[in-house]
Length: 632
Image (cartoon, rainbow, N blue to C red; front, side, top):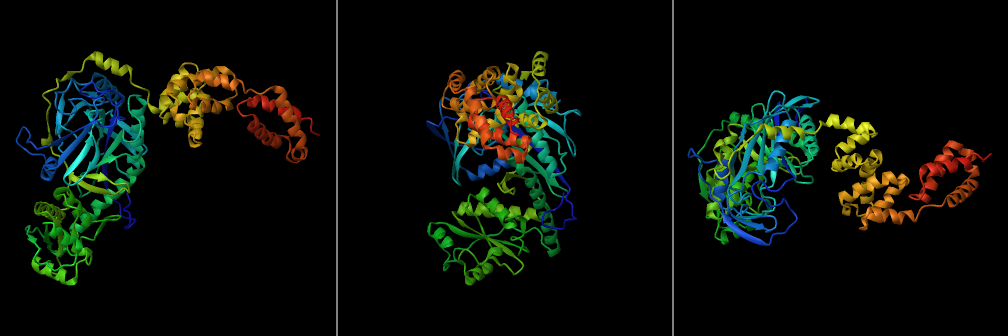
């Protein structure tokens, strides 16, 4: 992989693994509530979550971040989509058997080895996304030598497939509290993870598209924005594993991989330069600077102090100029420090010496700060304002991140940004976050369950593509239908007698065209569309009439009513012949100059535009040729 913005001959050795989180079409995982996301909350509750140690007495580092923030969480719920299980006021029901069967089917589809017994575990999560302080997850299958996905750059192995519950949907977040909706909480999802076999950004994107397609072909997954998310694990040679969370747009994957590899490489270069400067680990000395800045005209600082806050400073020996070092486009090392301060301290940001003069600080202010911190020309410094406890936590986090820069790249969980860059979220979780769920009994996987799951396994995408082509679809149309969210509707309609080419053309062309024209085709239920395709294939109506039928149905009428209305519009052949005869007569000079073939194409378009939906193309063509041949 080429390193962006630097020597184009330099290659970055990158290792990438992907994780998919795909919601399933089923009720919630541990109760009987529907997976309904369209209901607004009619009740709210407030909770505080506290960290607890694992069975070995250890604390998960990611959970420790949230514990330090000590936030309050508000949960909104609707009684038609959530119950006491989501509120953590009642024990969970047994594992959803339908969701488990879907997971088994997917495991066999990907040629993975299903475990003998599915045991539910608790995964500590106290960021508010689950009312209980943990997420329930269960390992369903493990990878085998046959569990891989082919790509143009080689095979990528699959490691694990888990069945777990979706998190709550965040509505609003801040430094002191956050609000969530519980309608999404506990919707079943499958988590599929690969080995770190991906070696380029392009291979990662290719793999993500292929696996997403295979999941959709099972027919058991939800569709739409947010129903599938990719996490990307990335490391470069000499760096460390970073988990990039929540990538929803496949088009961003190559850019995220490339920019994260660039960030890690730049951090390694920053480490090497610090070593050359003689920088080494240093003590954390946080200095209160209220007195040093008592005469400042900085509104940011004075307003914070007047509100009872402090100005705290931290010297970073030998770091002068390093905080403005760009790691990714628009993001510098100082941005990384600010992310840590925001997450751990709950502050709005930091001020640092590489961005001076800014923030309204005068030269006298800066001199007073340097004297108070005992900072020389080779040293950088960071300032934070706010309540004393938050400011001190923020600078403690800045200190830890600065010291880790002397060693290289710390492992982190990071958030994908819309521009392909990433931001710090929390440390990578450790093994101490997992422990057994004692309220849900294990499920023994029987041979009968496996046989049923195996019976439901769909064809591979390549096989389904050939099926579509055998129905008469072109290569291009078959590939489009394979990726259409309406592929199941297409298959059901054709199975029940609809013409395959007409049905595919309507789904892929007519519906999108009418939608762009403002016709409310999305109001037509899929069962009515299927009825339309079957009726139309038997009606003998010209194919061009399908758009008119859809327009009528979009107003709320049934296929039968639409056909009755359209039948009253059918053209009389005498009317058609009269129009064609007059048209040819008026275009004699044009016909002679263009020749019969070219004239036929042009006049065919004029006639079909006049009688669209009322006469078949074959009939119009036949009559047009009759009159064209009479032209001398």
